[in-house]
Amino acid sequence: MAEPDVTSVRPRADLATLPSYVPGRTIPGAIKLASNEVPAGPLPSVAKAIAEAAMQAHRYPDTGAGELTARLAGKLGVAEAQVAVGNGSVSLCQQLIQATCTSHDEVLFAWRSFEAYPIVTHVVGAKQVRVPLTGDHALDLDAMLAAITPQTRVAFVCTPNNPTGTIVHKAELDRFLDAVPSNVLVVLDEAYFEFVTDPDAGDGIDHLRERENIAVLRTFSKAYGLAGLRVGYAVASEEISDAVRKVCVPFSVNHLAQAAAIASLDAEEELFQRVHEIKGERDRVRGELVAAGYDVPESQANFVWLPLGERTAEFNEHCIEHKVVVRAFVGDGARVTIGTPEENDVFLTAAKSFSR
Image 1: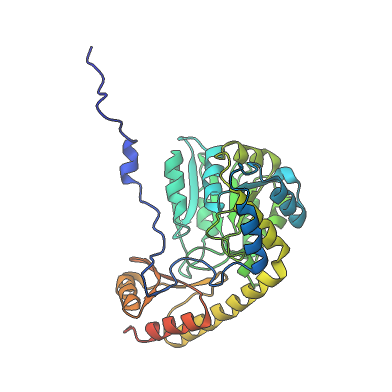
Image 2: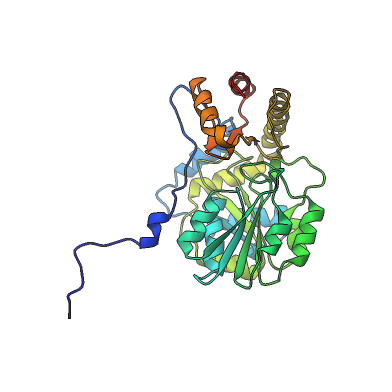
């Protein structure tokens, strides 16, 4: 019998084809509008809570995030057992797939949408099914419904959609949810929920109250300005939330993140004034881009989408030359985060000088 090859440890062969998650670039001296961060730092009250929590850094955090879970449950009007706190909503995406899928199952999502979906699906070993967006850069729920098979276990609905900023309206989401088989978990990824102004937009928590096969994802990274601390949460049935907690890496939400999230809930009124200003800047930036001749779908997030197709790479380099870093999805388009008014003006000057 041949001796086994023990000269090296080899990773899974299928990971060779797995694309890495590409974060927004940072270039010294340039304005970074490539990551969906808010431009202002933590509020003084939140910074104080972080500093105080740092004095307990020698202690393990509460792995169940009990105080934060209780606060979120009270805020949303759900049972504490329905809330699972995680290391950012992206980690919860992976935990939901781990908790529900095997290698025989399929995970369905629109494309282009959040670029972590195919990565976390592949890592877990499930099959990814991508459904093209509509010509208006929105999720095509009819096509997604048609793509469901007996093997489908999870369907991600990102609204507002990253990177296009478009939303799914309540009426169309109701029709979709009514038609989805009850054994398919529909994950409403609402990372940008707080930036939505459209009165016809849905609220995932309301849908959750009516159905068992829904999970809602939200985060403190965007509107609450805690992108660097990584804390998000899922709200689902008690059975699904319990399974999500079971596959969580212990202590993955650190003590500082939990303290900052609680302090941010206490400071919502002040934080949401900042969100209101970002919404106004978003609409101003989109309006000026449209007036300049760009095709820009209406955004309900803290960014705008320029579907530039094959000219995306050229536009990206043009912006870099003007000291602005955008998020380029080569061949598709560029996503531009809303910054301060001054930062947005620099970007608009660059965009208007690009030859179309």
